[in-house]
Image (cartoon, rainbow, N blue to C red):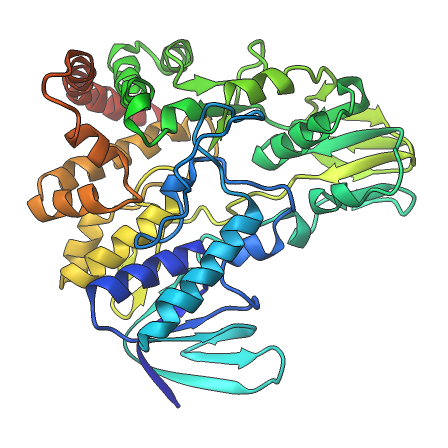
Length: 462
């Protein structure tokens, strides 16, 4: 029988970020179990041209930098901080495991193993079974269930004559097809469309099936360095001002768009979805070149010569390639307590940042004793799906931020943690920099009115 303090299920980004903080801040031993051959979770099966959609500075584990600290000089992210490729992220997590976690002598790693519950797991290769005595807690770092196209089973039927593939296979196409149909309006669908356009596919050769248009975030407002202070902190101030001044929920989204907090691809279509995806202005311009956008609900089936949707059908052809981008990045929206006796279930405690959240939760586990107190500090910020989910998400995020700000030690930890970023940017703003201080004052002046308006809107949505 094996023995450990913490049994961590999953060596994806969440599991790695959690283990890294425990390693740094405690003397605990850990066993990490994962079904893939290398750490990194879904990055092991991601499409070859995938990148992060937020700056690399906010990703990875707390102790080890992923970002190279450079801005892109070419491409659709030009002028903004670099976005690590899937290959870079995969290599990064492998490096952290081999050169940080394992050499400590306090971490054991069991790849290619399926966890079967109750402290037991089984080797996929040998069939050997293992039992673990867990002295402290089990950490379920797989709860959010990230889904990717290559392992996703479509929920519609596909005729045998149809050319159908996940976007992982786009670079393997042997000859030019008659056209492309991209199925899915989320970040994966966006990536597929941008990749096709980048490789000189004419916009009129692309049909994009979008069941729900999405609100998007301007990536310029997520930049981690001082030169983008006006965008990053100014964007937060604009967000709170829009809330404070909004007269209704529709008015709120109009104000958020007018102030540059939210973007949409087609300004004539009101989005019904919000997943927190970021996009650059250059990417937005490219996507607007695609005019063949089908808004007839979800795909029901793809036949040899037609695609049947909820609200009608469109023509297709066996020589057209159909690209599956219908997988939802996060497939588990159910919320449960993070700390439950012998179980820790990492979830988001800050909007858009599951990796930071995992590191923060590990710090709370290392610092506080009672589960009740830990759960109060780590209120789960719900993952957004519908457009109005933005309201509840922000309300809980703001409550968490306020509570953390009342704790001197937590403020210090946030300031020093590289995955946080914004706390340091705020605190380091020079007192004699009138422009930066004016932005900070705008933010502070609007926080309380914004919080009151959030409560009003949440009541209306209930």
